[in-house]
Image: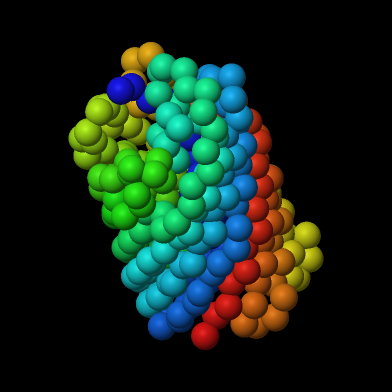
Length: 257
């Protein structure tokens, strides 16, 4: 069974962005949660809606970052649609709603460069998406995925630019095979005041099969530091092509300890 791609972990991608300004801090622990919503037809005729509620724990030292995300997911759409994979090439008219534990994601990052003087940060990250979601209920593929990526951040006074280049390896799943792919993102951010910043991100991922489209999305976001212990983020995104959601958005709240 050949499938196209979807995107339901956009909130996890953005939580990494909020750490750019704090990655020089040592020994910090934080918890993040919120909700991500996306909707799209993914080349079919019936809309699929996904609600994704992550709980993420993150621990940072001077050069290391460890993160674990345990999500709840709810999907309403055709029975042939799987989150983060998409619709099978055959049509399915039956619409169902299923929910439960999503795929747990663990990652480790190391700062190769973290210079306050130059404002340059270069991180390398290894990540595993464990196949913990129930594949029989269409909540996931039931197999693991593996990521390796490099991220670069550069601060220019009130503004900053950032980008990521990575490679994703899919374990073979029963019924279909996905190609391993390169993916990346480019973004800009600007401080609005001492506590707020806003920006724009473009994401791209290669097609996971010869008959599928690449995945591409534009995201606008707003970060707000509520206090020394609390910060919030909201974002909206628009996808292009059949491998991306048509639109979506979300909000996240982070507490530091």
